[in-house]
Image (cartoon, rainbow, N blue to C red; front, side):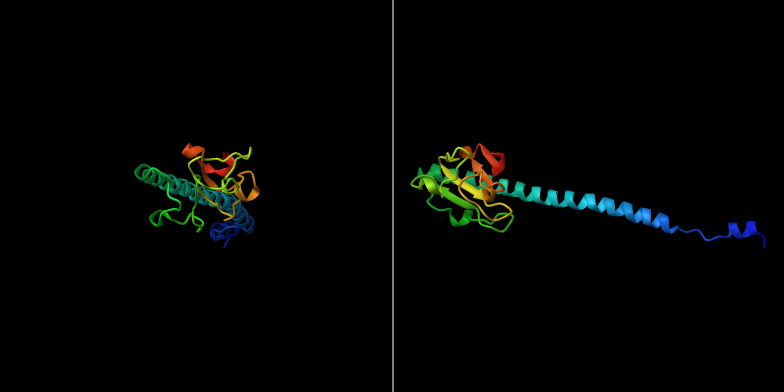
Length: 153
């Protein structure tokens, strides 16, 4: 058997360098894909909270039309958990102390009718939206003209 015939019958395969290059590329793709996937999941939770707050706020407006005032507490059928497993927070402005109201950066209440919000991913919140614990809250502000992340208001 000649040397040229041995070369032609050689088994095809991958070299160690080729396998390492492919594994490196897979690692790079995973390192890009995982953070994008996690960001997308969190964005979906924020959008779900915005939708929930919109639906509950609309129901509260209907109650106000029927009774000429907002309920003192969130009715049982409107009590839900936010996407992070915490109950939505509600406060009727009529009769509420100024310290209990959510406030903007100028310490002005963000609503005049009612506050409705999620405490966000960290599950913590304080009155002013500028506080670190409140920046990730999903809030209803400007009497419903804004529903979104507290840091964006």
